[in-house]
Length: 216
Image (cartoon, rainbow, N blue to C red; front, side, top):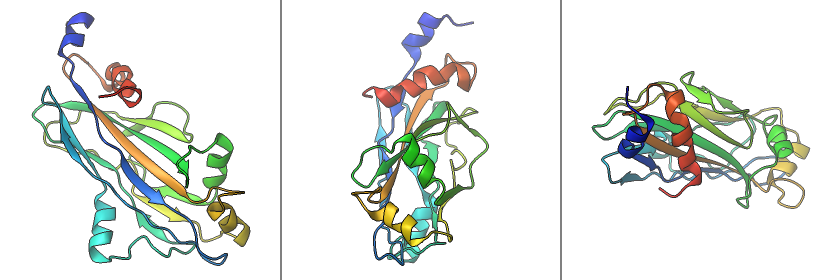
């Protein structure tokens, strides 16, 4: 069995650039409006560990309809399916961090997050993703199996649904920057670390999750 010190010398890791899904709530009291922009990049790092972070459902929606994600009304569903693809020859353990923000980019408080979750549904959660701690405004999810070279994860989740039961008061809170959120952002970032030296994802997650608070 490899010693910890040996493993430390061999580990290479990456922190993927943020994939930002912005759901900016606005419009009149009778409607929700939103624009969701996806930023996807493929970066290569020293040590040969590479990965990409994509949202195929969103990209397909935009390809079919240039106005996809705009002028939303209660009951609207948006495809949003963060997936990590291992683009290198090394097997990897991967994780995703999800941060819910106000429209101005500040992270939601616990109370704001709880209230928002009564107004939207995040659907299609992948069973392979395990929350590292209690789910809240900022949550890290670890993929519970090795991501073999050239393969991709299941989506962390698959869609964001604006509930059809929203009242005018709910809409005002979502869109008003003074008394409410002023819109909200869902920011997803990813990290990957080679499997060499780790037996399971739980062995790797301390080093892997630390990448979210350090510069790659």
